[in-house]
Amino acid sequence: MKIVVLGLNHKTASVEVREKLAFDAEAASRALCELKKRFPQAEFVLLSTCNRVELYCAGKQCQGADPDRLAEFLSEFQNIELEGFRQFLYAYENEDAVRHLLTVASSLDSLVVGEAQIIGQVKESYKLACAAKTTGKVLNRLFHCAFATSKQVYTTTSISNGRVSVAGVAVELAKQLFADISSARVVVIGAGDMGQLLVQHLLQVGARDITVVNRSYDRGLKLAEEFGIRAQKWEQLEEQLIGANIAIASASVQDYLFRKESFKNVMARRKDGTLLIIDIAVPRNFEPSVNEFEGVYLYSVDDLAAVVEQNRKARQRDMARGMEIVLESVTEFLEWFGAKDIGPLIGRMKEQFAQIGKNEMERFFVGCRQDASCKEVMEAMVNRVVNKLLHCVIKNVNAVAKENGVAEAARLVAHIVKQAEEITSEPDDQEESQP
Image (cartoon, rainbow, N blue to C red; front, side, top):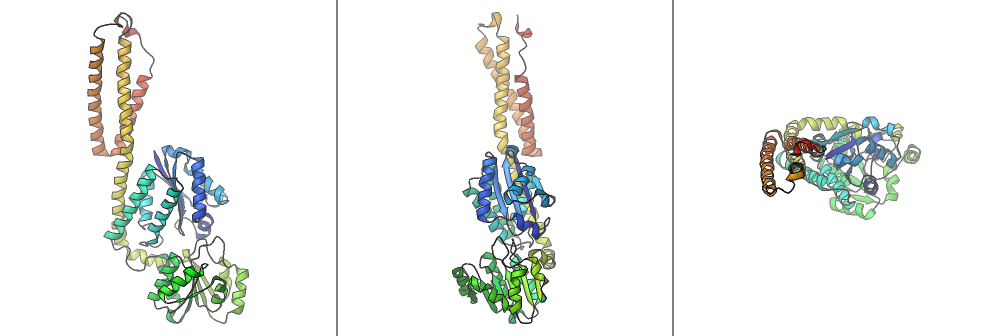
């Protein structure tokens, strides 16, 4: 049995690469179903956020779904040349894969350490996989372990204190770049979870003139009423940007809302003044070349590095404690992961030992001994010997598990089973059986 994760994230790939591989919920469901068709015995979960795209797989040798084939699948499904992103991929197996997921779920691998959004995203990805019927015993156990570990990290450390979200960092950057944010006209594009966080953080730093623009006007209006700000219809987005000082975008779309050519209409009607655009959506809402207009300063999620580094330094102690919790959980999961294979292996070992005893009895009771009266007694005696030997072996297996871990014990039993199978498959030697 093997667990594999293949992916890329903000540490290995730029936003230009990540957005090409990003999945929305509908695409993720289709991808999971296609994976299950190709590898019906394997388990899959697909995690796609603004900072990472990761495929988790479990199964006996992953049923052929090795990292190379998973990479080829991503290339084919997203219609992207594999050479365009192969160099940015990482692949982890078993213990490394388990540690990676638990680190991700606990926000210790996030762009903004301590951000709470990632655990919700991991849960949604797992829920999507359950709906697509692509999970199984191993990934079910692993993801629930990740949820419990994340909860422990958040409740026993201070890692989530302060401004610890991409939205919070974006607002912090806006505050640093715009001297008087209380007088700035701010447009928030998107009224989802990220949009709500943006509004909350903007109000906390003193912004007062905030308008939210969302595809669903009703959802935007609901957010506006909750926080005492304004909402405008999607058709008014361009008009809002004409008078804005700051725009922060987090809309979920598969193509740019504005390209350089279409943004000319906005710039032609703007009066003098700086427009700060912080685009934290992946895929991005603004084409990078929009930054070429005079007076426009466009930042993507990857440009938040300086503020993120301040956040990371302030949480070094909590990160260390969080990793201790993660490693403890990894050990517990691996004990279960190894133990789940020992039971069937010990069963196979018992079968092979019994077969060896049966084979030896058949070799002995041939010819004139075939109808010997002691046959039944001898059979009972051989069974007792086999069971006593098995007891000795199992006792030693338990000692190995206690001292060196369940995984090592499983390897020992597998080795014994292999040797026993070789013995039972040996051709009959009749020489010693004759009187």
